[in-house]
Image (cartoon, rainbow, N blue to C red; front, side, top):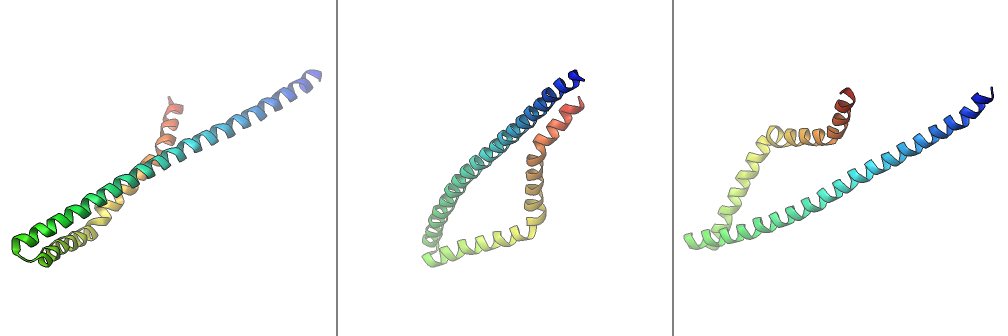
Length: 124
């Protein structure tokens, strides 16, 4: 009887320690995911900003160049606008299969990557 009574506090203590370790592990995993997400968002925002600047100034330069070639600055910008409208229509036509689905699949694989790796490790 005394052995059981002595083991219970040890067992309860070990269970409490295990629960605390699991909570700490969950917090560390959450912090890792959050820091990765924030880093990805910040670097993505910087790249989007730089891309927009390149796109904007490139469009301006191309509009002025085409306008100079045809002798009408306004027409050069309207031609560039027409090209962008055409590209927008093409993107809208193929967005479901060429953009949305591959992005969704990539996000799902990224989210489940760690889970799948741990499942495969347990099987070995």
